[in-house]
Length: 326
Image 1 (cartoon, one colour):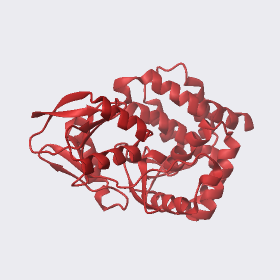
Image 2 (cartoon, rainbow, N blue to C red; image 1 turned 90 degrees about the vertical axis):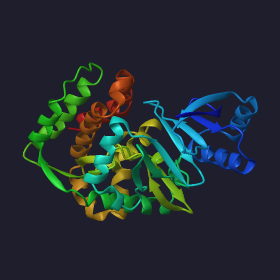
Image 3 (cartoon, rainbow, N blue to C red; image 1 turned 180 degrees about the vertical axis):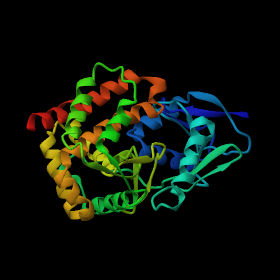
Image 4 (tube, one colour; image 1 turned 30 degrees about the vertical axis):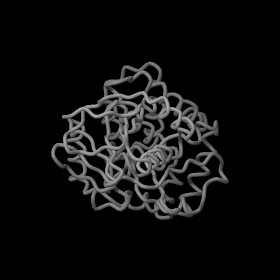
């Protein structure tokens, strides 16, 4: 390991000190495409020239260092080779196993990932993410590529699980969360109304959101951050993608329901009919799975109370609306 100097941009990004103008401009553009930072803010940070020394593996050239928000792990970016790499660690080993078990390197839109000298390397997405602010901002090209991704994953690792087994799996988690206990119980009641039914499962990304989908030349290039990949209810990714967008804009559950069903009727018709007949049922399953994910991810290590608050914000009104309809 050797110490190298980097310019502090903010708590998430560092740029290598003393690099040529071309590489500096590439580094700035990369950060602009991968964050909400403004160019003036980045240039001001570079001008302040607050330098930090970071120990790096020898013979690994790094232009940018990215510190993840939740776990504070460091990821190193080499723009010349279009690679991002990080130490293997315990969770890295788990991710490598998932890549092998689910054959992720064979899936379109998965950035090629491999292990080299104790570091996990991934291909960098060259494009940028799109986050529409209003309904008219959603483009048809976006829906088409999004649906391609959904159709690929929903066709893999298909299984079924009985409702009582599904609920039992959830109850195996020891919940000590007074804030969300009513929400969770309402979800269970919604599912138990169809106690003889089965829940269709498939492979799911597990953390699908706008910030994890990168587009290049108006086409989906890569989907990133696959650490939460797993077998869940087949509509998990769709709900996980659209629900936060609607909640943050104070839309009601009925609006989300209408939007998702219209989207699926048009772009994923093979999945649409089952959801149309069981929308509330699958949304309740999604809410429980989202809660399970809290306790399977690294969130548990850091600030689980903050995670509980985010969960409450996301599901409290939505689940109550469903319960009031029945």
